[in-house]
Length: 147
Image (cartoon, rainbow, N blue to C red; front, side):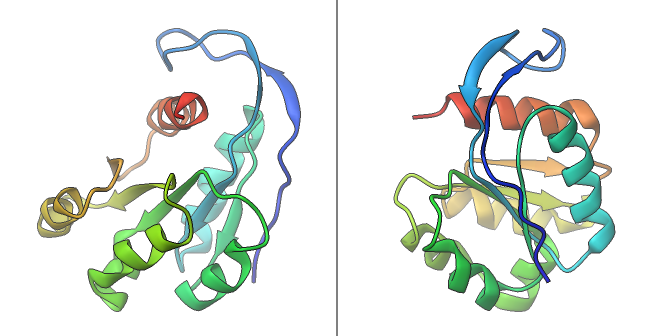
């Protein structure tokens, strides 16, 4: 199952304490989330959509790969549970879809081993649960301005 939201040009205002940019015109990044958790995907969708960003949700890696070639991807929020199931090779496989793609690992405190591994594999960043609104929005703002 996939929830899809297409990029739109929109005036988006983000508070200075929540991100590095205030009001600006931009085309939202093509964001994806790869997680089996409907609650996690819904949480990210609610926050990002309310602030002018779209999000595609994929429950598994094969469906992500199948659909990623159809639209440009700027960033993937990758649940640590998917990494545990798929192994560390998933980082390289995801990066093959786009050389400029940023991977952001979503993890719990107990996933510290995966954080170290992910940083060694060149992920863009990590966000630790409980995934506060400001953390998600700040990361989206950084990703939107990333070349």
